[in-house]
Length: 106
Image (tube, rainbow, N blue to C red; front, side, top):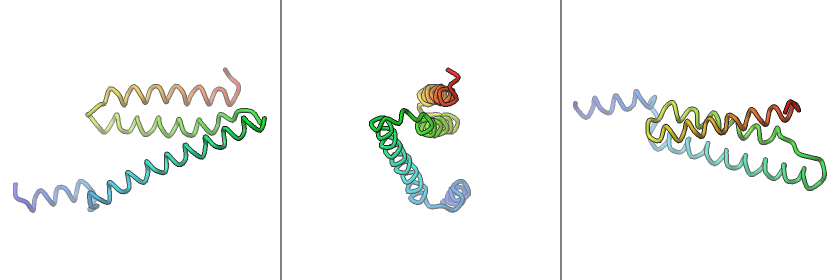
């Protein structure tokens, strides 16, 4: 293959985005998820310490995010697929448990 053909295939595969741009978007998503987790933890602790009880909806949002993120990785990446499938199952079960707890089913 010629250099031009390889570059054309890469551009097509990456939808004309630069590799650096893709990495920045991915890192931005990870930082946003971490910020979300920290804020939800602050809210959760505040509710517990002020006597308002536990609000499982906050952590169900985090767990559904993790379920989808690991599920997507397990589909798209062959490397460490077993670990991603395991994490998807664990986070999925946690999501279900938190939703059921919210509706007081369990």
